[in-house]
Image 1 (cartoon, helix red, strand yellow):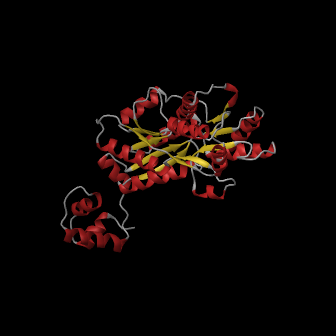
Image 2 (cartoon, helix red, strand yellow; image 1 turned 30 degrees about the vertical axis):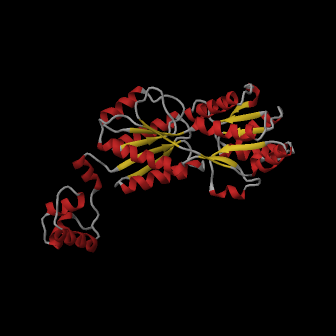
Image 3 (cartoon, helix red, strand yellow; image 1 turned 90 degrees about the vertical axis):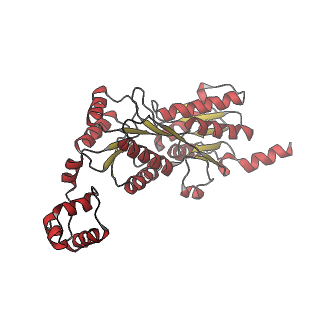
Length: 341
């Protein structure tokens, strides 16, 4: 295997010049740079990134922890982060915590041992231990929080307008004439779940409707929990439901079939998140489209900027959602009924 000395001999330059080209640490004339790059290509030279990291105190890697990589929401988030990290000269290490704080802590400590330069974290419900926070501070490794906030952890944050998403979705149902609007929430303890419930409550207040605890059931963002919540809620005869994510909507639709009920004829549905394949869903789902790729990209940009400017003021970025109206809310049928009145 070729080494840096072989490259220097082939290019007829000094080892210092090869190092400057490989690491970008000093100016090299275009002519010499071209010779070095030609030699690297001809010899198949692979720089020693570990040695480079020890010299520069940077590994040019970022760690990223998401709760569930199998959730269709997160691959797009990860892709946005990866593209932005790559453009900035970083590679991305990805882990899935399954919303388990012990597993999450294991990965965070692993990232520290791998000398990552920064971490993007969608936090499992619960606090980050004080000793782990101190370890990150001591290592000068910044954490950027993605989607979920954490009490007592000073960090840059990129988030969605979760409260606004639920508020807009429920108000859309109210404007269509639905009055018993139920809510299937996400994982208890997650800040995203709390904010979407806040949005549901705010919409009821704006519509001058009474909050009925019996019409609210928690899930955990997975299919089975949407099914169980549906079986429980449908006994109480809501005429519409806002569901906090797409996977729980899949489960809820199965509960509808169990009750021999139809959407939107018997129960209208609006859900959070939008995907290209939803046009194949029957009925097509009315959704609040969450900016997944932009979320990941913004988180990666924040962590890259934090690495470059560790003393800069902490930032919070909130991204906008968009309502996508389709058949599951019964929009066309309800509008026809309203006009007929």
